[in-house]
Length: 312
Image 1 (cartoon, rainbow, N blue to C red):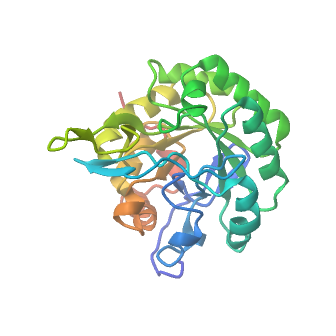
Image 2: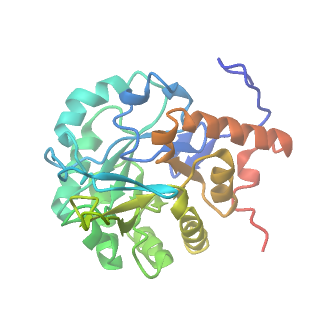
């Protein structure tokens, strides 16, 4: 088939995440693609597998004070603190723009209590144009909520089960890497009824200004992302994929098609590109085209032929 950019692929890139059908496995990681519109001048949003918007809370959040982003060797630290317009502001002001595209919109949900997760999920479920929910139990940059839920398997199960009761949308649970046993956390989400899990979120880190002997980030610590964390993310995705029966979505240091292919081969059904969007606004398109080229080169007719095909 051909598309407007005249590139050709012989293979089928369609993947399924529960009842959610994607034209290809490439998504945008929450918090790295704004609300979608910001990247529209650079990316044909219709070509993406899915758009995952910034994490949404019940009320608007200002986030953490600056400085809150710091480049590191092979990555970046961020302590944005889930700044967002709030779920109602998103539905009223941001979602209408996204409805014009033929690409599923996934809302990332954050709460400081189980009740907040449920309320945000209810608002989004009632809104036209949301195709799935990604439940963020793993943000390392806020003082309450995410981290406490993301490191306790019982809480993961409770939050997941609660959200499943108030929505008929597919529910993806985004897991924290700051745990001892990632597979156990994935299983806890599956036990709660999750349709899929996504991992990993950022790894907690810090950086110091040696001249002034103060942290570079006002928040002191932040979430490390980018190529530096890819080997850890890849290992955790492989461990999760071998433990659960629901789809696993890989995240962490995916900058190129080769990176994405590694995650797919170890068992991820789809991937999310995050930090790559800051380096190259068209990174997602390059990844899609690179996967197409790989399939053509190896004569794969269907992307699912090599998902989880790791030889050990």
